[in-house]
Figure (cartoon, rainbow, N blue to C red):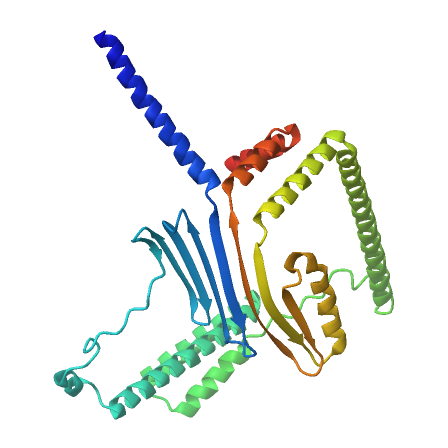
Length: 364
């Protein structure tokens, strides 16, 4: 008897937990999430305000979002506990950034700061000038041929020897300049080597041969480019044809057609249950160009089944303007979303697409 009573107690506790879980699941699925929003837009660009509110289970869970020119503000509360709130800008504390009298006395005067800035500018300009000179010298050195460099080095060595001798003998500056010129005259620059093949051909035949070679090279490169472009174009056509055939096969597949029909059906089902219960508002749009206003009105007329008769649209043809106000509310039950998901996943094709999508995400 004791064992049976213990089993009954355990069974009753388990049954109670099961009933609590079922009750919680029913509350989540069947209790609607109510939402509402209102906003307006004035003629000025910064004159607008949008407020969105949502609550669940007799406002136990509340959410609010406000969007203005100052930014987006969010607030989420559970009972009286704030779960999420937009950070507010910290107000500056009094006296936190005030300077003491001693600090003010120790700070430099404006004249000293101006002098320091002028000195820094002069130093930077001198540095930039020296860098430019170094770059010019390096570019000149790079242009000199190695043979000429050797001759320049020999000349510099001879000039240095002449200067050393002049310092030893104590000669005048004019005599030193004459000695350097005599030493530089002794060094003769190397003659430019003539290119090979000029002795064999006359000066009249050389330009003709060069022109013919250039024409042959240009024609050859043009033909090669045309062939490459043509082969690439043929490859693109083949790829497009293959993709078209694959898409055609997928469209003609009866299983894919059934999956598309099922998807459209569930989208309509969700729109029917999640659309706005109340929608009111007024919108005015105008422009200097009447044709532009007509095009906008044409596009908005397509959405007339969505916003209905309670939402008025006013065209303005004499001035540019865009203003209005709007209010809508409705509710969402998660049971409808769960029914749609289950019905879609029962289809084999949709299940394979979802599995491949998640598999690709995991591989990435």
